[in-house]
Image (cartoon, rainbow, N blue to C red; front, side):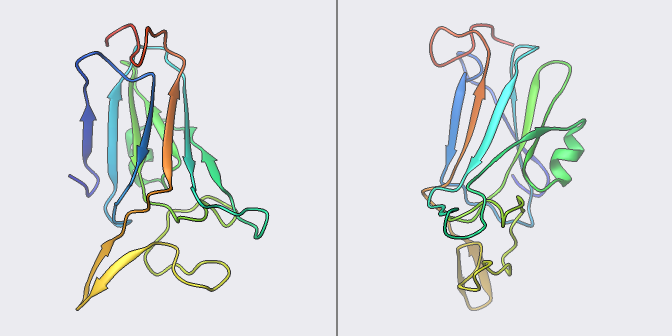
Length: 161
């Protein structure tokens, strides 16, 4: 579900040490949250990447490192570059769809359908439109990476929260 709600990811073997989210297709007006329980004290590095960015050509940002905030509400109402970890170790992030060629112009932004690329050559978000219906169109080159410092013996944190 979207619209300010979200998903809690629970895996049989525990929380992933690292994960990469790709092919994101989310309407900008419907916040999508994702929560994952991690061992308490886990530190996170979360980065949004624009797969076909050419920062040297224009004043664009190719990646954005998320910052920690004090509540789930701040994540939900934010622009998509923040995360929250509660006292039990549950991480919450907002998943947004970014432009294929940048994540900021140069500041990070939550793109809307009518936003024009800084160069004036098209829209920030890819979409499919016909007869008054507009749907987000996924971008295959963009991704969101989540890395942790949890102790692991493979793909998952050793401690299961």
